[in-house]
Image (cartoon, rainbow, N blue to C red):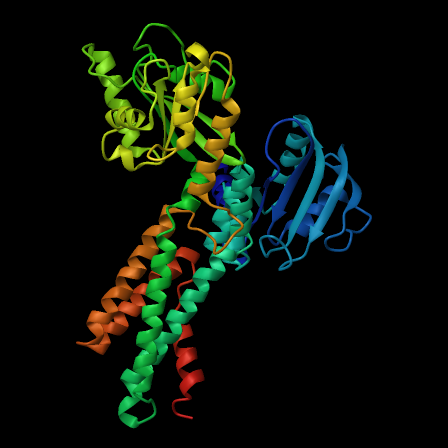
Length: 487
């Protein structure tokens, strides 16, 4: 008997699962983050959202779609009041996911939130959402493409103003529309080429079509190439500019790190070679994200542990987007040529190709205010941006932050200006493959039109993988729309 009941229960579960698979299940989760807060938003999405909201609120009837209403939230099993909150109902497809959705704006105490979640979990047909499932459903329903979904994730994680602006622009679809325009251009070129291959013998398609396809492909290849050659601005802004503090031992590198982050993040000692490992902090400088690394002093070390620290410092220099080269202002030459030579010995190629700020520390120890050295710093060329600073007194910090902000703005660009930037290495990979296929089109075009068409198909697939839109029917639609073959 017990076995029969167990099998019967298993059968019901399988029936529910099959039904859920056929009609779509309903998911729920806290969508406003976790922890104690004034208001927490609990969202449901799926065909059972309306019934779930009615089960928790009871009479009166639900408010009209997209209208907030104050309701008493009750446990459907016990009728116990869990909270009094605002609720809103979204009828699909006019919702974030494109499905029926409901939101409960409850008080954010952990007991309230967990009580509402338990009540939802006991309703038939509802289950907790998997990570990212709301956004995944929005993508499947065509509410977002992949670039917009990535922009939404970046917006949630944005920590600086520039990151927020770039992520919002991407979430609103600017990057996706750019790639979609390229995809449509390529689709049209491919449709015209295939129409020429299939129907040119019947005199339905002129030879001039081939010249138009060639010109379109060449222009698109150039546009994608320019987009790829953006200096990784979008990726740097999204992930943060990696800056490395480098210099000989005991010049104040760790003191500079602590001054910039306004806390004792690194150990400071008068003993040379104190820093052995890389110390990393994340900063917001002028609205731009900066990941700053303090490294071991660069010298020919004899201690095995310090040797490893120096090796790691040199590795970080090779990977850096920006270098803060620190020298002792009391020991350097006071003319630009001498300063340039000291910098060159500190940063041999290829590190010299990396954008750099020369920081001359210990300005408080200069005799007579260091007038000659200050004049050399102000002259600029052949030096990079240079500043005198005292990590002990804070003198020169404002000028250093100004120089940092200028370098970050140059590396990351203005996220609101011009064409939207690449933000993901995934985009770069597919666009590089797309550009490569377009380049090979020209070579194949002279030998075999069928192989040339295959290159365009491959390029189109790479574009489609960026946005998540890969289809074949579009090509047929354009063939019959533009050429009316068989009319």
